[in-house]
Length: 83
Image 1 (tube, rainbow, N blue to C red):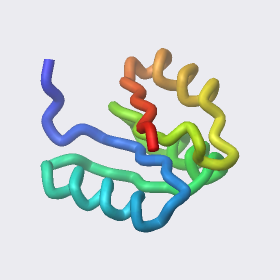
Image 2: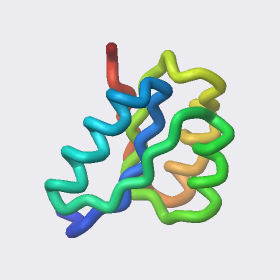
Image 3: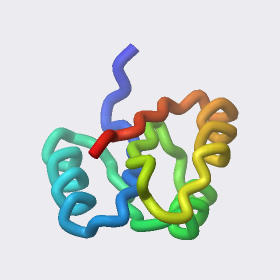
Protein backbone atom coordinates (compact mmCIF):
# COMPACT_ATOMS: atom_id res chain seq x y z
CA UNK A 1 0.00 0.00 0.00
CA UNK A 2 1.48 3.33 -1.06
CA UNK A 3 1.33 6.32 1.24
CA UNK A 4 0.82 9.67 -0.42
CA UNK A 5 3.04 12.37 1.05
CA UNK A 6 4.72 10.12 3.64
CA UNK A 7 6.24 11.63 6.78
CA UNK A 8 9.93 10.77 6.84
CA UNK A 9 12.36 11.37 9.69
CA UNK A 10 15.96 11.63 8.47
CA UNK A 11 18.62 11.29 11.18
CA UNK A 12 22.07 12.13 9.85
CA UNK A 13 24.92 13.92 11.61
CA UNK A 14 26.60 15.15 8.43
CA UNK A 15 24.86 18.41 7.44
CA UNK A 16 25.55 18.12 3.70
CA UNK A 17 24.30 14.55 3.51
CA UNK A 18 21.23 15.37 5.63
CA UNK A 19 20.39 18.36 3.42
CA UNK A 20 20.84 16.37 0.21
CA UNK A 21 18.61 13.51 1.39
CA UNK A 22 15.93 15.88 2.69
CA UNK A 23 15.92 17.91 -0.54
CA UNK A 24 15.59 14.79 -2.67
CA UNK A 25 12.70 13.47 -0.58
CA UNK A 26 10.89 16.84 -0.53
CA UNK A 27 11.22 17.05 -4.32
CA UNK A 28 9.47 13.68 -4.45
CA UNK A 29 6.38 14.68 -2.47
CA UNK A 30 7.56 13.61 0.97
CA UNK A 31 7.13 15.51 4.22
CA UNK A 32 10.59 15.51 5.79
CA UNK A 33 11.90 16.24 9.24
CA UNK A 34 15.70 16.19 9.19
CA UNK A 35 17.70 16.08 12.43
CA UNK A 36 21.34 15.63 13.33
CA UNK A 37 21.40 13.54 16.50
CA UNK A 38 19.56 11.34 18.93
CA UNK A 39 18.28 14.21 21.07
CA UNK A 40 16.66 15.95 18.09
CA UNK A 41 15.37 12.59 16.90
CA UNK A 42 13.59 12.00 20.21
CA UNK A 43 11.92 15.42 20.01
CA UNK A 44 10.87 14.85 16.42
CA UNK A 45 9.46 11.42 17.28
CA UNK A 46 7.34 13.00 20.00
CA UNK A 47 6.15 15.87 17.81
CA UNK A 48 5.45 14.19 14.46
CA UNK A 49 3.81 11.07 13.09
CA UNK A 50 6.51 9.20 11.18
CA UNK A 51 5.95 6.71 8.37
CA UNK A 52 9.62 6.05 7.64
CA UNK A 53 12.80 6.50 9.69
CA UNK A 54 16.03 6.91 7.69
CA UNK A 55 19.26 6.92 9.64
CA UNK A 56 22.91 5.98 9.41
CA UNK A 57 24.19 3.61 12.06
CA UNK A 58 27.18 5.89 12.68
CA UNK A 59 25.02 8.88 13.68
CA UNK A 60 26.08 9.91 17.15
CA UNK A 61 23.78 9.34 20.10
CA UNK A 62 21.19 7.50 18.05
CA UNK A 63 19.02 5.11 19.96
CA UNK A 64 18.09 2.43 17.47
CA UNK A 65 16.03 0.67 20.12
CA UNK A 66 13.91 3.82 20.50
CA UNK A 67 13.35 3.93 16.75
CA UNK A 68 12.49 0.25 16.65
CA UNK A 69 10.03 0.52 19.54
CA UNK A 70 8.33 3.59 18.07
CA UNK A 71 8.26 2.05 14.59
CA UNK A 72 6.50 -1.05 15.86
CA UNK A 73 4.04 1.04 17.88
CA UNK A 74 3.15 3.28 14.93
CA UNK A 75 3.61 0.70 12.15
CA UNK A 76 6.36 2.83 10.59
CA UNK A 77 9.20 1.46 8.49
CA UNK A 78 12.88 1.83 9.37
CA UNK A 79 15.85 1.90 7.03
CA UNK A 80 19.49 2.13 8.02
CA UNK A 81 21.62 3.77 5.34
CA UNK A 82 25.12 2.43 4.96
CA UNK A 83 27.92 4.87 4.38
